[in-house]
Image (cartoon, rainbow, N blue to C red; front, side, top):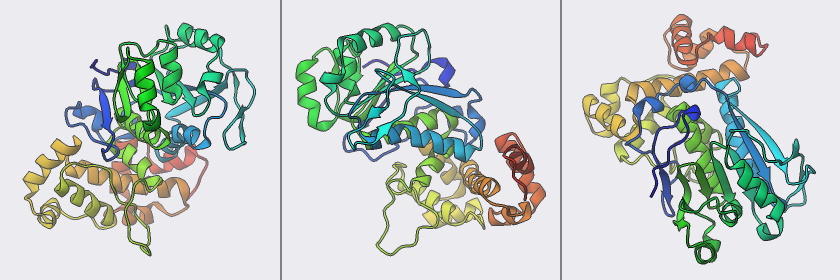
Length: 362
């Protein structure tokens, strides 16, 4: 298999990501460059733009699975990390499978833009993949930094020969049909596959998995974790449980002790535990816990703990009028000044700067 390397402007590490069909979601890849996993929103300064080509009869949830994680990342970061532009083949609103039209900015035309292009399709892709559209895709592929086939968008790319020699995946119901029709594509039973300049997904939820992975690569594990928490993603809970701080759920931190430590961190944001006590609670020494975190997540436990606390604090800075002293106390800081210093180091601006920029006042 080819090594899946994203172009330099995206800041992603050179690693091919492949999610086994039965894998738990949002899998960490321990061989990644750890610098990309620093829990800072500022990990990548360049705003990223995606072009989305939506074909008729696409599921609404498929479109949301691409856009909503990006919107959530912008919300959590408090600034525009991502932008997207919607296109249809003819420039008219896209008729979705639910009968709810999606407005678009323009018709899709081949151009020399290098931004990533996502091709979204659910039903009747053969009818929608016209000769003109396939020609346009083949033309624009010469310039795009990457092209993604989302759900049956993988068929559209394969039909245009844009997956020849690449590894790819598709919806499990269509696997045999795809494998027979396109033997030149290395088809894998994965949730999503990133291979070089090509991405493919196997459905709506795998697309959400993909977007979390892209956010993680660009802006670090902690921001992606916060996005997944915003959707209470894959959380397991007993009926009647009150959801206050969504846990990591089935997000596979491969070491049980690390996962237990992360859950403890989430439960103790207001009163952080010392590393020695945290390690004792999960049955290891503080030094061993440090090693486990670096191996499983690429960051030190203190860094991840701090990121969780600052992310929780930032939500209150942005979404409430609470005083900074109250926010500091609620996120485990001894004083407003120590909170402000950590906040500035993490986000590149002060809490008051965030509120001023967003025209808010305490």
